[in-house]
Image (cartoon, rainbow, N blue to C red; front, side):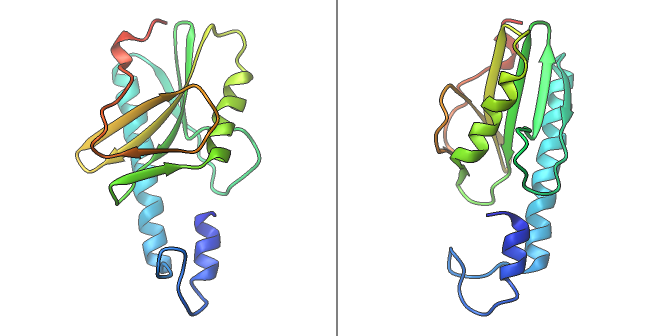
Length: 152
C-alpha cells in the first residue's frame, strides 16, 4: 500500500491496519525521512568512490526502479531504502522483485548486487539478498555486506 493510498484512507473514520489512520502531516514526515535516508546513502556511496544516484519516483509504478543505484568499476548495486521509526524495516516481495528486474538490465556488469538498506536512528543496516522474497531487517542486526571489500 502506498503512502498516497494511506492518505486517501485517512479521510475515513475508523482504524487502519496498525490500529489507527495516519494523518497527512504524519505521512509527509514519513516520506521526508525516507527521502533524506536515500540522499544520505548517495552521499555515503560517493564518499566511498561509487558513482551513485537517487531515483526519485513520486508514485508507485510497475517500472523496475530502485531507490538508489551505484556503480564502480565492473559492479552495479541496486538499493531499496527504508527509514523506519520502529525496530524493524519490512521489504515486501514486489519491491524486492523490482531490484532484481532492474539488475537484469545490466548484463554487461559481471557483479550485480541487490541490497536492502535500513536507516535506523544512529545506525545503518545493509543486507545483500540473493532471492526474491519478503524480508525484514531488525535494528539490532549486523550488516552482511561491507562496501570497502566489494570486488569491482
